[in-house]
Length: 311
Ligand code: NAD
Ligand code: UDP
Figure 1 (tube, protein in one colour):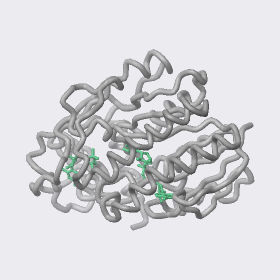
Figure 2 (figure 1 turned 180 degrees about the horizontal axis):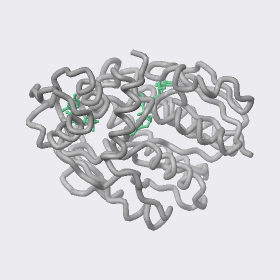
Figure 3 (figure 1 turned 180 degrees about the vertical axis):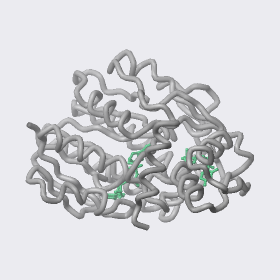
């Protein structure tokens, strides 16, 4: 049994991680400021003696004696991270600094949830970890992209200079239950629109691509990464390499929900990456991991989740 701190534990991915860690018999402290997280995501854990939550903003230092830290705190949907860009960059940079300093002080292992956004609008396809990316440092997505890049730098410098036991994962587009209906990301938007019979809003032509990973696959990969030997820090891609255009995704959602929704086209947001697909060779080699849940199966589970959601 370990004591584990999960920042952002009431969010979409964090709530799945807390559930899994508690299920495996660990004591979990969930830190969250509830900006995009919700108590309903962790309601099933509230009465469990292994679980506690603390309302806290990671831009302010926090202290606890734990064995491991997962730093997931940060809004991940473009509309939410752009809503208060300054808070996003503070969360990414100061939050990462506060938690890695805590790890250094108490000798804990720490995993940083980084992102495929560190590759920006990639010129290399698919994206291996060795690719340095193509990122606009002054655009509307920069608070998130550059914040996450800086957090990776901070982690690597704590590893080199202070020997902190760090892990960095670069998460590619992930979806699953516990996403909010107003999350703003593409799968939740399309699903909710399709189930309500509203127009499906494609930004741009829909020819841009993404590769979608179901959350259970990601959680498997995260736990495996945390358990790797100390001399393996990453960064390591975790994502599903099956690539779809956004138009193909819209069509799949319509088919799976048997929806009468029409597809409509809105302007493409600034700096929206044209293509994205992870190279997961390193994850296969180091973790013996690859995603198992195909998009059709994951989308059916999302449809069920949003059908039963108490709006
Ligand atoms: P989410 O928005 O559902 O969860 C983020 C959680 O962090 C929320 O509970 C929010 O309230 C909390 N939070 C935000 N700022 C905070 C702060 N300053 N202090 C404390 N808590 C704070 O997003 P998610 O999809 O679950 O993403 C979790 C992590 O994974 C994020 O760091 C994100 O960058 C990373 N990630 C996610 C994806 C994805 O596709 N879901 C892709 C790449 C990276
Ligand atoms: N997108 C879309 N309609 C929506 C929401 C998103 O066409 O209602 C597009 C968006 O422009 C992007 C892709 O879907 O090209 C993925 O968007 P998301 O916000 O989910 O993730 P990210 O852009 O961060 O990969």
